[in-house]
Length: 270
Image (cartoon, rainbow, N blue to C red; front, side, top):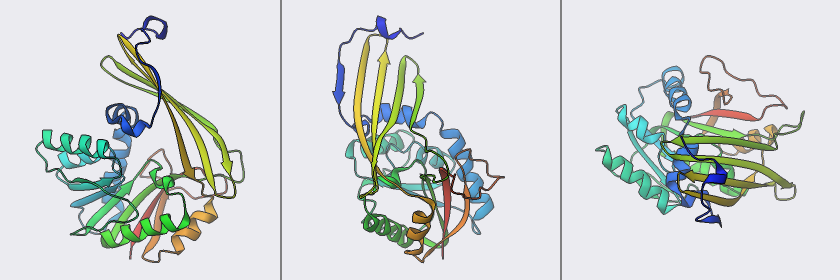
């Protein structure tokens, strides 16, 4: 049983840094609920892909929390990410399980692959780090070139609802052995001119003898329903084949409305 906050010596205090520079903590915090996403992805393969899925790519793959599980199921996986620490963590994990080191340091808006993939996915809003329309279009064009015809890009993002107030904050926790991580994210506001939402993020890391607070700041491009649909029309290689929400219920597709926030878009490569 871990100690309460008051019992843990403040040996490190707090640090202003990016959570992406702490791949062990990031992987635990964002990977603790991997099973729902993993099952959903495989459900999409069975329901929406016309051919068997063998090769899978993840842009902005981070620590490879889903790629490693897919690899253990026999899929050939690869990914890229700008953060070298995350890529090293991902490749070390691959190697420990007997798989090749197929994650590379790369920009999700400017990359090429040697062999096309059957499926790609980006599940947890990383797409919104692309701060301009030009960057978003460039990414989708790269993804279209990376996928074979009939392949699919599974893209999960938060839309900004117009018929109701958006969610303003979120907290969640994860634990592995004596390592406990609590997080709190909140919106600091939206720059309407640049369509950028400013987010604060506090990550509290506990062990039996230590506490560390990581203070982070993130910026996400905002998308309303119409804005995202307009973006997709700029990349005619893709069409929206289906939409789901973040409950990841493969048996229930979601109809987007002006109240919709969490959407998984299944973009089919024509």
